[in-house]
Image (cartoon, rainbow, N blue to C red; front, side, top):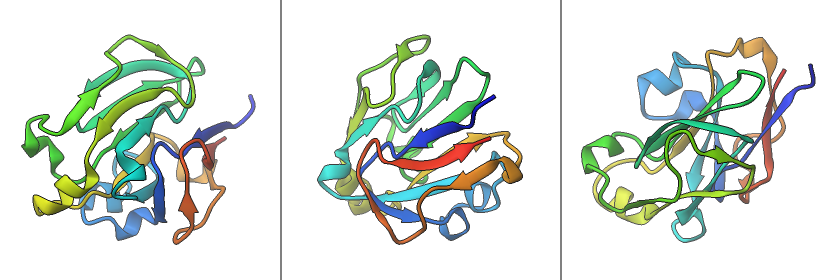
Length: 153
């Protein structure tokens, strides 16, 4: 089976998971991946990083399952569940079929930061063996949506 390429869901600067201010993501407890510190303006549009079905859709996070059974989690900010959906506009629902690059959420990263929460966005290969995840871009690099971020082998 070919490796799955996971695209950057937001515009911003790539951050290593170990540098995310959340022990679950930093410790790769839900899986390996990378994070993106979103651009305050360009990072407002969040796209599907892979083709698949929306398994979970919350204002602050979503999970996509690919046809091959791989799961990808995108979490918009840290502790943003506490915002109760305020400032997030959903463009997809659970069970929707989505394609890479499709708009899924619009949000305001600057408002998240202003609320005292980190706006960093972990992009996680759910339950994947870290040995099967290969970075295609290094922390510190600036990415645009749809730019390849990592592969899941």
